[in-house]
Image (cartoon, rainbow, N blue to C red):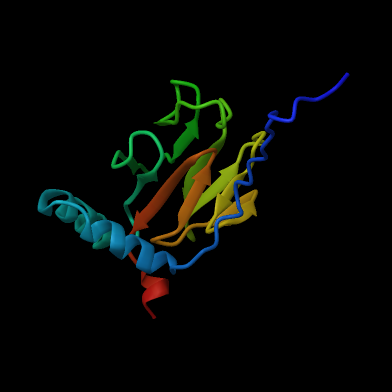
Length: 153
Protein backbone atom coordinates (compact mmCIF):
# COMPACT_ATOMS: atom_id res chain seq x y z
CA UNK A 1 0.00 0.00 0.00
CA UNK A 2 1.45 3.37 -1.06
CA UNK A 3 1.50 6.32 1.29
CA UNK A 4 0.38 9.69 0.04
CA UNK A 5 3.14 12.29 -0.29
CA UNK A 6 0.80 14.73 1.49
CA UNK A 7 0.25 12.50 4.52
CA UNK A 8 1.40 14.20 7.69
CA UNK A 9 2.21 12.70 11.02
CA UNK A 10 3.17 14.47 14.19
CA UNK A 11 4.35 13.56 17.64
CA UNK A 12 3.30 15.42 20.76
CA UNK A 13 6.27 16.10 23.04
CA UNK A 14 4.78 17.32 26.30
CA UNK A 15 8.08 18.19 27.95
CA UNK A 16 10.03 19.56 24.99
CA UNK A 17 9.33 23.26 25.60
CA UNK A 18 12.49 24.96 26.88
CA UNK A 19 12.22 26.50 30.35
CA UNK A 20 13.36 30.09 29.95
CA UNK A 21 12.10 31.55 33.23
CA UNK A 22 12.34 30.51 36.84
CA UNK A 23 9.18 29.37 38.62
CA UNK A 24 9.09 32.61 40.65
CA UNK A 25 9.60 34.72 37.50
CA UNK A 26 6.86 32.86 35.65
CA UNK A 27 4.42 33.53 38.50
CA UNK A 28 5.41 37.21 38.82
CA UNK A 29 4.90 37.67 35.08
CA UNK A 30 1.47 36.06 35.24
CA UNK A 31 0.35 38.06 38.31
CA UNK A 32 1.48 41.31 36.64
CA UNK A 33 -0.92 40.58 33.76
CA UNK A 34 -3.94 40.30 36.11
CA UNK A 35 -6.36 42.99 37.17
CA UNK A 36 -6.11 44.51 40.65
CA UNK A 37 -8.82 42.31 42.20
CA UNK A 38 -7.19 39.09 40.95
CA UNK A 39 -3.77 40.32 42.12
CA UNK A 40 -5.23 40.80 45.62
CA UNK A 41 -6.57 37.23 45.66
CA UNK A 42 -3.10 35.91 44.73
CA UNK A 43 -1.48 38.16 47.39
CA UNK A 44 -3.78 36.67 50.06
CA UNK A 45 -2.68 33.15 49.11
CA UNK A 46 0.99 34.20 49.09
CA UNK A 47 0.71 35.77 52.55
CA UNK A 48 -0.92 32.67 54.06
CA UNK A 49 2.28 31.23 55.49
CA UNK A 50 1.85 28.08 53.40
CA UNK A 51 -1.57 27.22 54.84
CA UNK A 52 -3.41 27.99 51.59
CA UNK A 53 -2.71 27.17 47.96
CA UNK A 54 -4.21 27.79 44.55
CA UNK A 55 -3.79 26.50 41.02
CA UNK A 56 -4.20 28.90 38.07
CA UNK A 57 -4.65 27.83 34.46
CA UNK A 58 -1.83 29.63 32.68
CA UNK A 59 -2.17 28.04 29.22
CA UNK A 60 -4.89 25.97 27.65
CA UNK A 61 -8.66 26.16 27.63
CA UNK A 62 -10.13 28.22 30.46
CA UNK A 63 -6.93 30.24 30.86
CA UNK A 64 -7.27 32.40 33.96
CA UNK A 65 -9.42 29.94 35.89
CA UNK A 66 -8.31 29.45 39.46
CA UNK A 67 -8.87 26.64 41.93
CA UNK A 68 -8.38 26.83 45.69
CA UNK A 69 -6.58 23.84 47.18
CA UNK A 70 -8.14 22.95 50.54
CA UNK A 71 -6.64 21.00 53.45
CA UNK A 72 -8.31 17.92 51.93
CA UNK A 73 -6.33 18.47 48.71
CA UNK A 74 -7.68 18.46 45.17
CA UNK A 75 -8.08 15.82 42.50
CA UNK A 76 -7.24 16.72 38.90
CA UNK A 77 -8.58 15.02 35.81
CA UNK A 78 -11.02 14.73 32.92
CA UNK A 79 -13.87 13.34 35.04
CA UNK A 80 -16.37 15.98 36.18
CA UNK A 81 -16.09 14.59 39.72
CA UNK A 82 -12.58 16.10 40.07
CA UNK A 83 -12.02 19.33 42.00
CA UNK A 84 -9.96 20.55 39.04
CA UNK A 85 -11.79 19.47 35.89
CA UNK A 86 -9.63 19.62 32.73
CA UNK A 87 -11.81 18.74 29.75
CA UNK A 88 -9.48 17.30 27.11
CA UNK A 89 -8.56 13.82 25.84
CA UNK A 90 -4.88 14.44 26.75
CA UNK A 91 -5.93 14.32 30.43
CA UNK A 92 -6.75 11.04 32.17
CA UNK A 93 -10.06 10.75 34.01
CA UNK A 94 -8.21 10.60 37.31
CA UNK A 95 -4.88 12.17 36.35
CA UNK A 96 -3.25 13.56 39.51
CA UNK A 97 -3.87 14.79 43.03
CA UNK A 98 -2.49 17.64 45.12
CA UNK A 99 -2.29 16.80 48.81
CA UNK A 100 -1.37 18.82 51.87
CA UNK A 101 1.17 17.38 54.29
CA UNK A 102 3.41 18.65 57.06
CA UNK A 103 6.08 19.43 54.43
CA UNK A 104 3.69 21.49 52.27
CA UNK A 105 1.69 20.63 49.18
CA UNK A 106 2.64 17.64 47.04
CA UNK A 107 1.59 16.59 43.56
CA UNK A 108 1.13 12.89 42.84
CA UNK A 109 0.48 11.39 39.41
CA UNK A 110 -2.29 8.75 39.51
CA UNK A 111 -0.78 6.43 36.87
CA UNK A 112 -1.98 8.74 34.09
CA UNK A 113 -1.47 7.81 30.45
CA UNK A 114 0.38 11.00 29.34
CA UNK A 115 2.20 11.70 32.61
CA UNK A 116 2.47 14.75 34.82
CA UNK A 117 5.23 17.36 34.56
CA UNK A 118 6.52 19.96 37.01
CA UNK A 119 8.75 22.61 35.45
CA UNK A 120 9.14 20.40 32.35
CA UNK A 121 10.34 17.36 34.31
CA UNK A 122 8.26 14.19 34.36
CA UNK A 123 7.23 13.37 37.95
CA UNK A 124 5.29 10.71 39.82
CA UNK A 125 5.49 12.62 43.11
CA UNK A 126 6.78 16.16 43.75
CA UNK A 127 6.81 18.69 46.59
CA UNK A 128 5.41 21.88 45.05
CA UNK A 129 6.85 25.38 45.44
CA UNK A 130 5.06 28.61 44.67
CA UNK A 131 5.47 29.40 40.98
CA UNK A 132 5.93 25.79 39.85
CA UNK A 133 4.38 25.08 36.47
CA UNK A 134 2.38 21.86 36.35
CA UNK A 135 1.67 20.42 32.92
CA UNK A 136 -1.18 17.97 32.61
CA UNK A 137 -2.02 17.14 29.01
CA UNK A 138 -2.15 20.39 27.08
CA UNK A 139 -2.90 22.44 30.20
CA UNK A 140 -0.25 24.50 31.95
CA UNK A 141 -1.10 25.32 35.55
CA UNK A 142 0.72 27.61 37.97
CA UNK A 143 0.89 26.60 41.62
CA UNK A 144 0.65 29.42 44.18
CA UNK A 145 1.19 29.24 47.92
CA UNK A 146 2.86 31.27 50.66
CA UNK A 147 6.22 30.60 52.21
CA UNK A 148 6.18 28.20 55.12
CA UNK A 149 8.11 28.99 58.28
CA UNK A 150 10.81 26.44 57.36
CA UNK A 151 11.31 27.90 53.84
CA UNK A 152 11.63 31.47 55.15
CA UNK A 153 14.77 30.64 57.18
